[in-house]
Length: 229
Image (cartoon, rainbow, N blue to C red; front, side, top):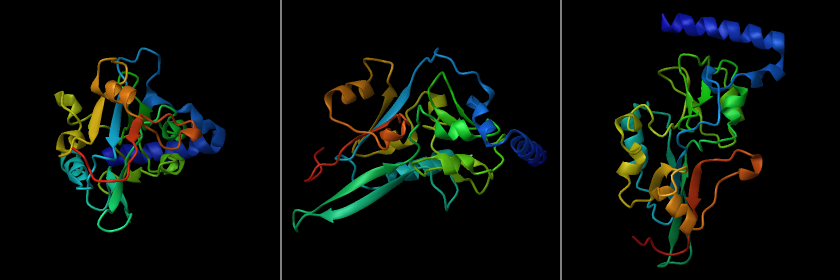
């Protein structure tokens, strides 16, 4: 039944796009939810590249917690290096996952509302029932992190474990699994949250902000030398 409904949506989507033209893609927003300014919180994540050791505990925990199939991934740790001369060599580890953009390019192009923004949490998610696999969101994402889930046949990505850990009042799986505490998660609207304290006291950067994406994944740039815990 689910498959038939999605096929119906896909047919309806194609017809609507053909009638309205490419300009009509931007009308779909927030999965049918009307966005407003009454956001209760704004979740964000910090990745400290100095504390990250590239152990992949985060990506393993993500896969197990969210039932991510083999061959695709919501979270990867990319490695660069070694840099420097032996024995003083070092590596750089960077996180590749959804940036939870406030600019929401993926949401803006979704013709069915499957990609949506939750105004209560600031999290960008995918409603797999509404997704027709058109790949518009994948093409629109400047971070190239979305993929088609081979099991659900819908677009997929990191959603801060909102359907698993956050529902239980816990931190995202990657944050809990990190052995070096390289990840900090919290509410940007809470001035006393740990994530706000870190951002206020530590130099940080975000990726591709010049595109107007306004990502909510922050990074503490890797410095030359050994990991200090």
